[in-house]
Every structure is written in structure tokens, then in C-alpha cells.
Length: 182
Image 1 (cartoon, rainbow, N blue to C red):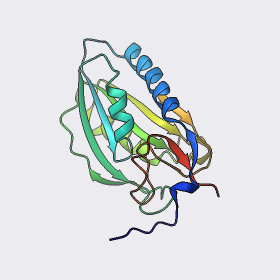
Image 2 (cartoon, helix red, strand yellow):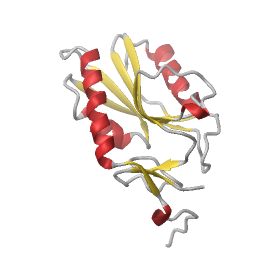
Image 3 (cartoon, rainbow, N blue to C red):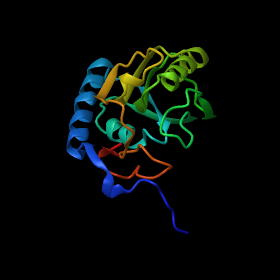
């Protein structure tokens, strides 16, 4: 079966190189290591599927005991912009009551998904401490305020792919982040 995409990787322009991403992750990990005690467990919750590469590279650099969990949400569907409607796909988590929690997301744009996750964890699980990390922050698209504790890069209004971010499920495997020119 041949997959036909209306976007071609040869048209993709690099926005953040693999080296820049890894350097920024090292800096973020240092900030997180300075925030959370080295001897206390940290529950890292990755929002699938986009954040998996970022989250896995990030936790390799954290110095405290890590419990790695995953949730699945949907807000894009097959579009290039968030619909603003967050659809929980799988929110199965162990008890987080009284624990330190770090939610890891690939990109925050409208803020709906980030706020949904933060509110859900606070209300349903009552953690001791909750922090939020995102690789990309698209402030120009923000509709709801989000308290982001750890931010990789700010991006303007481009549709980005690579390093976990996709277009119709493709391009996640690229080691860099790129965009298609308009």
C-alpha cells in the first residue's frame, strides 16, 4: 500500500536541529533536577504520541527515581490546527496522590490540552506538586493561559513536524523539527 501525503519531506525546512534540541533538553533537565529532590520519586506523564521522544530523552537526564506513565489525548484529528476540543483516549494512571508529577507535552498551542491535563491530574489525583514541561510553546495561538514551568522553544505560527510531532501520523521519526513553507 502506498501512502500519498500532500506534504513532501524534501520541502521541509529545518527549524530546530537535532543538536539544538538535545542541548535544550539538557538545560531543561538541569532545571528539573534543581526543582525536585534527588531522593524523592517523580512521576513523569507523557502525553502520547507526540511527546514520546522528548519525554524519553528528558527522563534519561533526570537524577531522581522516575515512574514513567502515559496518557493519550486528541485535539488535532487530521487537521493542522488544534480543534480546541480535547478528547480523552486513555487516561489510565496509577494513584498520584501526594506525589510529585511532571506532565510532558510536545507542543502547547491553544492551551486547551495542557489545561485539561493539569486540571484532570489536580482534581482526580491530588498530587503533592505538579509541574508542566513542553518542548514547543506556540504562544501566538494561545486561547487559554497555561502555567508552563519548563519550556524548550517558542515557535511562531508554523505547522511543525519531526522529533515526535506528526502530519497524518508521519514525520515523527525525524531527529529534528521542521516546518513546511506556506
